[in-house]
Figure 1: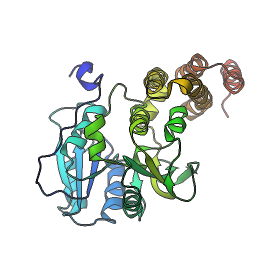
Figure 2: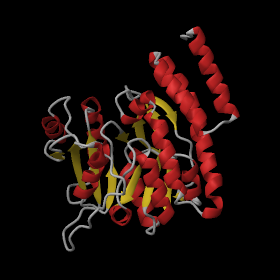
Figure 3: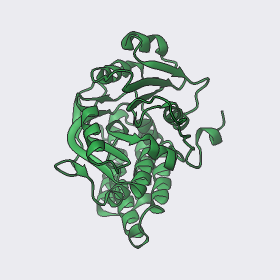
Figure 4: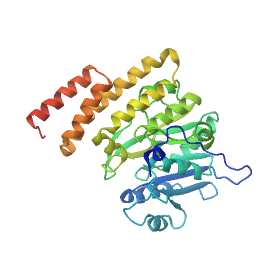
Length: 330
């Protein structure tokens, strides 16, 4: 399958559902590709909050996994409660997300990657946000990062307290990625209006949240009710080691600039480039110390300086170059 299909260059159209059909409130759509080791925890975290099939659609969308019999595994864990759909061939993450959205029937779509988990109370809290603020296009909770074993790494920084609509969310999300996909639920109507994910395979979610923020209010709860897993097999990690993330994020920053108020666009964009420059300058050290991947570390360091020249990024780059010169391994 050619890359032109795998990476749509405009938002895929999400077709409205036929009028008059019975629809659940929720669609928990779980895109998977070779993440069988984490899928049991993922499914159980949803099933522990199952509201019944009349209210909650739960479906795994498999992008041609090769790490086991995913259908049999889903049937075993879900005991018939979780639906399963397999792509005829590997179509890539963007097209798999599109399939998830197209197959959803609920009013609220939780695109829930197969290696993440939600905490008891997630769907209840999100529903409360939609009920309290019916004008919003999406709602999300706070979350934490976990490692390969499911152990807590760190909490995300809280945006507001107590819960409510995030004021000037477009300005905030335009400067930095503030959430992970596991923590956000989007109205199907929102996707139908704006289209799906497109353009890049790293940072495509950031662009989507900014696009939503440009057209809708977004609500947030400071409760930590989702967990995002950091591990070597996910797209984010692979992009970091290859350096593709720098190229993709640069493209996303340019795209998001188009959504911003003209008077503030350049300032917000400059801040975004600075934030990601500092982030990747620090990430370079993690890539190096995790596997002594000098190529990946250099790609992050060089890319960080291309995004923006600032005190933090230059300092981190000098430290990295020094480590590489002396082959520092601590």
